[in-house]
Image (tube, rainbow, N blue to C red; front, side, top):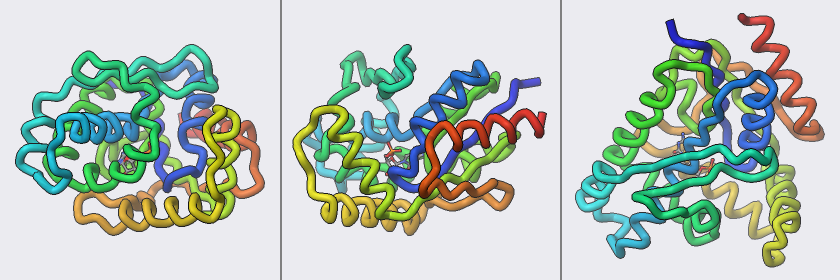
Length: 226
Ligand code: C5P
């Protein structure tokens, strides 16, 4: 007797976070950003000076890590994230973390621990969870499963606009495309729960669509299903 769950998966920069936040606000559901948890774990590894390949030491770190997520009141800002009591909200969005997160997220022990925490969050349902393996592994019985995609070009452009909006230093569009394609490749070819569309997920290609259109589609779909 849990409340419904909406699972949103897809590659980097497809607009998952913005859309998931809007859908959650619209339907009065809780928003869970699972990528933020892998980012927090990556920050922790970098901070503790452990080698990214040292899976044993990382497993120990993962078993002891306490991640707290507090969705921001402002729909435009990312979730507030604390790991072991440190507020890492801004640190987890830096290029240093972004370029290494896929290597950490590919490790079995890390996934076991974080998926356990995510499932704990979702025990009572009533949430919109966003990530790479939500519909396939974390909540395979989610009532609504969405797979959001967009071309690499479109996703890189959106990232560029995000950076500008946040007043971050200028980045090269071609470099962004390369980084995004590389992260997609790592996330979809790893051994443990790779990025994959669930068989029963509805795919939405977001090229040329506004976030409000995508949000409306998902809200409609949810209301039809329930
Ligand atoms: O969504 P976001 O870009 O913040 O995710 C960062 C990284 O975390 C992804 O590139 C992926 O390696 C990992 N991730 C994952 N499984 C999830 C969510 C994120 O492996 N459910």
